[in-house]
Image: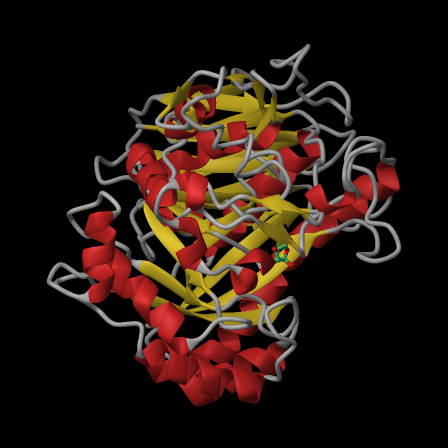
Length: 493
Ligand code: AHR
């Protein structure tokens, strides 16, 4: 099918915050333990306890911000259990995720060290559901206060002299569900109370994030904006792409048919509707877009792989996940005025992960490669994109292609395009208005021969980016052929 795409390169919109390319790591399954933290005495090569192979892979995708320690885990986490000598730390049950022992070896110091190693800003989620105002307040004091105080002195006793820079702080997680089953009016009041004691010490400026809506709970957004907008910098939203039913069967990550492919694409595109509608409510209370919409959990969610712990949320990752990632990141880019941050769930071994590990082995997922390709959009200016793209009717009930475009400070324009169709090529005429005739085109593509293609420990490079050559450029326009199930990023300079 043929499509016309026009990008206006001399008209810049909002800046695409690099934080849209954020990640999330929870004490869940093998994300933190095994996936990131193996401990200094492990036979797996590590840097201060963090496995070196995973660290290096993550450094290559330029992660701007990392959310921790949950998730549902955050509202059961008591930070004081996770500091001091590791062998003395409390062993507890991770009640929410598999009932396994949590030995608290990865705590505040280890997380903030990981952030420093990754060059990433920390986003800490505090405990409202089962914690106290004092506990939350003291956590911030422990991490960020420079002077003499019980918490700052305790931090120094535990080996860290200087305070850390902690910018992003979440006040509870999913307070409508695992975070306390609250009503929005009740949570809005609690939010106002808790955030009062989340203090800014020295010159540390905090960006406070209120727990936001589940999917299409627009009333939650309405109440939070009405009752608490002046006290927040961000309001969150959680939405997962699930082809089946959350409770009755989400669908397999690897074994799916065309109907399941199609519904996955439709549900990934639904993120656009959700953001538009939450955004409209936020606009009515905050027309200047001061409060960011923080999509701090998103991604595919399938049934766990057969034979794995149901509480560990381990799923494989195919080219379908890569297309979902490309589409979703395009949507965030296009809503950059309001979407200030997003965090894919989750970083390693859980849900739509970047990296999978097994003992000393590791491979990168197709989703990792999309993050690698899309990092060019971080902090670039959003460009208007017009996509004249049809719904073919017979084959699918959603647009075949989806894209976004941006311009970096040095003038390089990047256009990311996805072909969502499982079977058909997409022929695209791309016109970059406002560019001179003398331009240089380069492209990278991620695609696959079969819809189930994915990487494994035995075949780690089955799905990997390659140079994209199927285009003819003439000045500021080009004719491209995007193969089925593909994600392409073009650089035009
Ligand atoms: O990411 C997995 C879980 O999904 C999180 O812990 C929770 O916040 C959400 O329901």
